[in-house]
Image 1 (cartoon, rainbow, N blue to C red):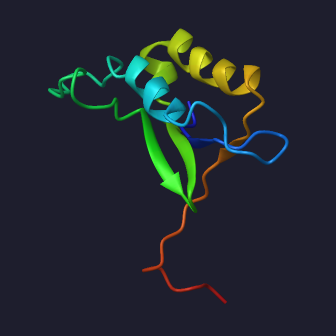
Image 2 (cartoon, rainbow, N blue to C red):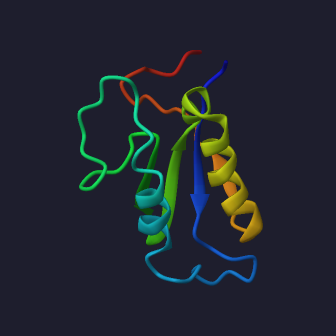
Length: 104
C-alpha cells in the first residue's frame, strides 16, 4: 500500500476555527492506543505516532499517517469520517527536502 501523510485542518467551510478549541487533542487522545508493534509509549501520556495534533500557521490540525489503516482499517475510517462529518478539509502532505538541490 502507498502510505501518505494527511492533514485535517481545523477550519470550517465558513473559514472559522472548528470548535471546541481542543478538538485536535481530543481526537488524538481517542486514537492514542493505536501504535505500531513494539511501540513502548504509554497511551495515557502520549499520542499515537499515526494521529497527532499540530499547529500550522496558527490553525489546529491533525496529522494522519495512513499506515494506521494497516494496523486497523476501522481506525483510519473513524478519523477520516470525523473530518468529513464535520466538514473539515483533508489535505495530502507534500514532501520537501531542502537538502536536495533542484534538478535542471
